[in-house]
Length: 151
Image (cartoon, rainbow, N blue to C red; front, top):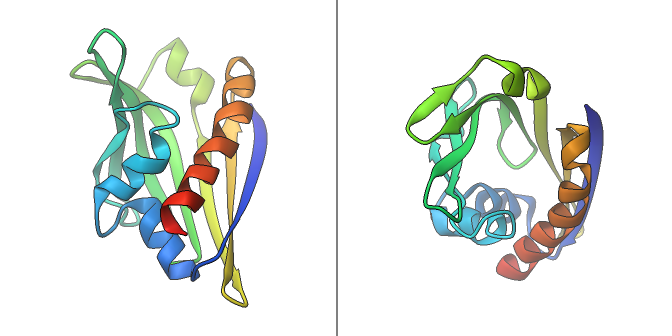
């Protein structure tokens, strides 16, 4: 896996960026920026440390898919760490096998740093080689969409 990093400056408080990014008040704000990855993207579960959370959507054939993850750390408006350890295949949770082993232990971390009313949100993500182009293309667009939603 390779580590990628993406940053976006947003004219808003760290708390507002954090709350909007995670969809804490309304899931629709999370769905808004993650729609860049999949128009039906959402999450199931909660963002509390130690919680299991699903990041899911429906593919072009109507099949449900996504990631099985755990919230490893959650410091409100500062840092959120997500560990991906499986995937969703329809109604099944798959946590072992060749596909899972490729992503095993991969993290996606969100950091929020506010200075003078401008928050820099930083995303650090572990990505397998076959998805490097996808994330390099989509993550900057997703963070630009987050900025648009907030500002």
